[in-house]
Image 1 (cartoon, each protein chain N blue to C red):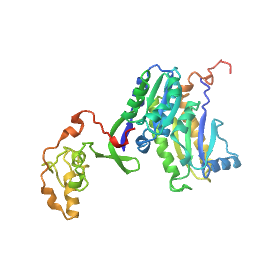
Image 2: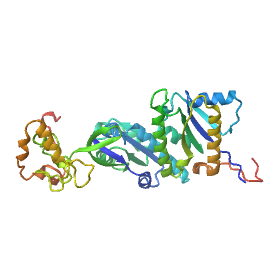
Image 3: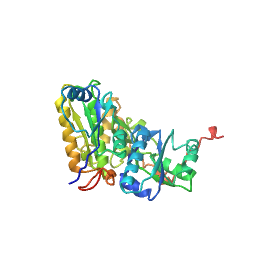
Image 4: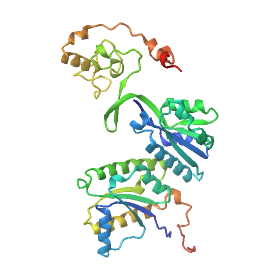
Length: 222
Length: 148
């Protein structure tokens, strides 16, 4: 899922400027799972903004709504009435949600309330770790299910590098060396020889270097 | 001298603080009348936004009173409550209200005198801090010579 972290309150407050009616919109998808943008966080943020503005002697009205997903237009359409009544919209979704709201309602100022961080998973309640680098061409089948693109600090395809020590990364000793993990996993599966396979230069045009990507399923187009 | 009387909301767990308050009453213990109690089935029922809303609606101070750590009727409710209180303290600092206005206490149902002591402690703390920035304009601050 997409992992996001809420922005400091002061930054959000600054971005809503002098708005008097603020609509705070949450997302029921990834950001609900990573506890940064669901219904609870929407309520906390709305209360916080009201308190802040009341303290400054410029009270605001807030309305709240949490959509099933902000990255699907049919859900975003449902906001029409509430958005019309608002001076400013605060989105607690990832960057996609913010852009979808902004595109669908171009006359309204849509303010992001989060910094979208990475694609990851939960390691324990309250802890998330990055697991996918969105490189567009998955090689996990050949690396024992451990991604060197994102888990190696240098995204090395033929590792480990000279900085790997005692199975730890030179960038941060708390980070396990991805290539040590890959070797251990391959060995456990009895195919450690696979480590000798040399990966050719990666085609980064399938990643962000190829510009914004698009994925089309012709068979399901209406 | 200011005659500021703080308004304090106490979120009290049914199994400890709420019973301790009953006991304090039976023991005829005196404690400040500034405390408004809200009974919870467990201090773990508290949510971040409930604490914030209390301030928004005019509280000068808020505290959550749960069972002694390790003695929660639902195992970890009071530990969760403490974490939520800590989180909201930081939020209150960010909001300029001040995290000191919020506190978490642990006590057992037999601690009637401690309940009264906590009420006094919190009232004195908030009295020293003065009214919440949200209530600064409130008529509850009466200066000498002013009429109530």
